Length: 238
Ligand SMILES: N[C@@H](CCC(=O)N[C@@H](CS)C(=O)NCC(=O)O)C(=O)O
Image (tube, rainbow, N blue to C red; front, side, top):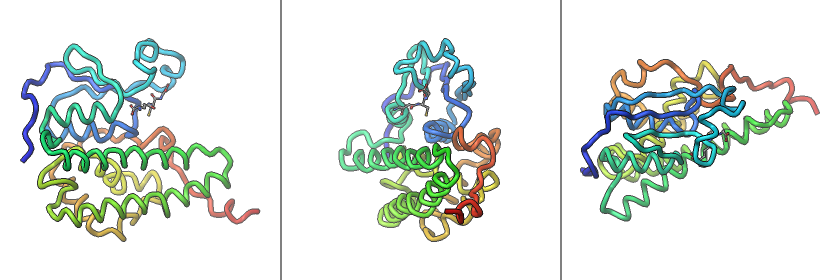
């Protein structure tokens, strides 16, 4: 059992980010799982690019921004750790377990970097190569590692025997395989080779009840705002 640092929850919690999963989905999941009321503020991307007031004011000129009581917090992983400590999802006095949780939180960022790299190619053939590599190699590498971790931990959680920030980091990715296959058919059956990870995802997501499924759907990232297809015909051309 992991104890939390503080029980006092401010009346104002506002999480500002663009209207997609991106870096913020584990943070949203943590707050939803805990049942903490927060404003899920979806910032207009075009306004932001146009130099909105929020962009001018944001430390480092980036999102996400968490308003927590009177203070604003930035840097998604630092925010995640801050909230995890507050709400009992971070092992406060066990250095070894802290390392394990941090390891998985960092792997979430690396997974996402691969996604961005694959989708930012503009030329079709290059994008096809990127997509294939993202789904067949990059994703599999991370799924295999998470599958092994969960199997070896043997408790149904990523670290220790209860929910930690590591679980939200993994589930923010694997839950997508179930919810977004209509956006991108390449998500279909992607978890099938990793049965521990698949079972874990289904079990842990069930713990949320309807907290996740009752939200309005948002895309995985800005590139997924419309259906993304792999173009096999283009791939055949030299
Ligand atoms: N290390 C930062 C990176 C933040 C970041 O790159 N945010 C992107 C969105 S994912 C952003 O604000 N892009 C718009 C901009 O830089 O103007 C974090 O993890 O919060």
